[in-house]
Image 1: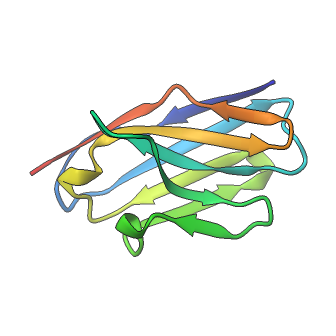
Image 2: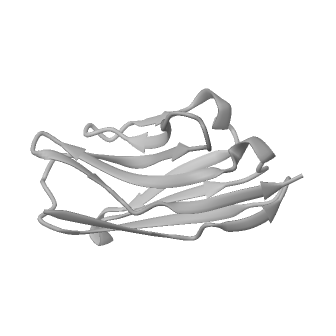
Amino acid sequence: QVQLVESGGGLVQAGGSLRLSCAASGSIPSIYAMGWYRQAPGKQRELVARFTSGGSTNYADSVKGRFTISRDSAKNTVLLQMNSLKPEDTAVYYCNLASPYGTAWGQGTQVTVSS
């Protein structure tokens, strides 16, 4: 079983920056995709950015050029650097790890961007 622990959310003014961190532990498979999703009130959960199992990255169009995903494979950690934040980025951000054996979610961390 995989456990994901997120940190780094908070309140920031529009134009500011935040960095989210997600650390994976437990029975981590050798092949997996890992990244970040978010869910705003009244909306569906959506992909923000992720590493695919092949190592490439996917970004939502709404965050391209502003958010950067990176990872420390030795520490099984994925980071999300969020710059030029907008009020519409306000959401609960969830870390996700997906493999042929199943999917794990973190508990979520709140990001609030004030205008």
